[in-house]
Amino acid sequence: MYPTKEDKTKIFEKHGKAKTDTGSAEGQIALFTARIEHLSQHLKRNIHDYNTERSLVKLVGKRRSLLDYLMKKDIVRYRAIVKELGLRK
Image (cartoon, rainbow, N blue to C red; front, side, top):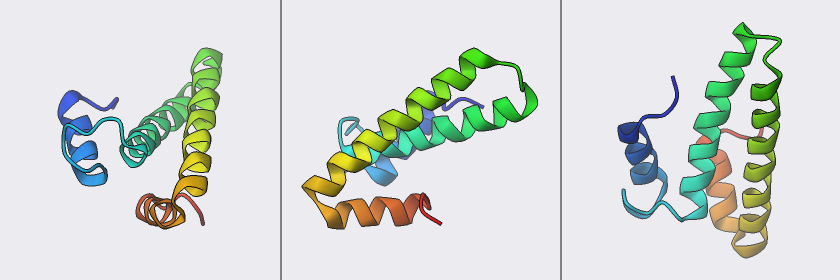
C-alpha cells in the first residue's frame, strides 16, 4: 500500500533528524525507497501498466541523484543510509 501520512512520519522519524524533518537527504531517500518498493509490487501484478513503470524509473533516478549528492557531500552518511536501507547487495 502507498505510504500514508503516519507511515511517512515514521520514515522521517527513523531516517531523518526529527519526525518533521522532511528535507534531509536521508529521509527523502528512505521515502523514495518505500515508494519504489510499492510500485515494484504493483508492477508485478499489473505488467502492462506503463505509466506506473515510467513513474518508477523517474523515482529511481531521483533517488540515485540524492544518493550521488550525499556521496559527494558526506560519505559517512551515504554509507549509513545505504546499509540501513539495504540498497547495495
